[in-house]
Length: 124
Image 1 (cartoon, rainbow, N blue to C red):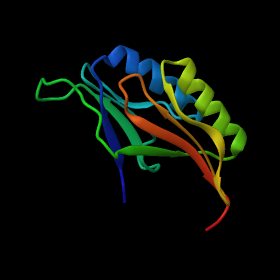
Image 2 (tube, one colour; image 1 turned 180 degrees about the vertical axis):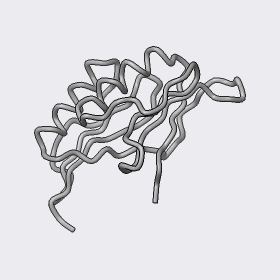
Image 3 (spheres, rainbow, N blue to C red; image 1 turned 90 degrees about the vertical axis):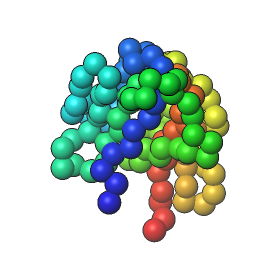
């Protein structure tokens, strides 16, 4: 149902470094790339993530209550994604750990303050 999500940035070069590294851990590269918008994903291969400078010319701001969740294959990948995020300008919003039975996650923000998490579920 979801094709991709788009997050705003005030510094595209800084954001690209962050998302190239995080998406690279998933084996995903850029599928669209121009001066104001870059998207990572595989065409026809599930949801992707885009990064853009706002088209209205105003500064990008963070949505309160908005978060993008990235599904990892195992707890080790959750840890790697979290480490990659922090090493590329991200900030911690909750280190990797069991949140409740069957749900393991790490929470972080990108360099612009957009909230993301890496998670894995063992139920459902």
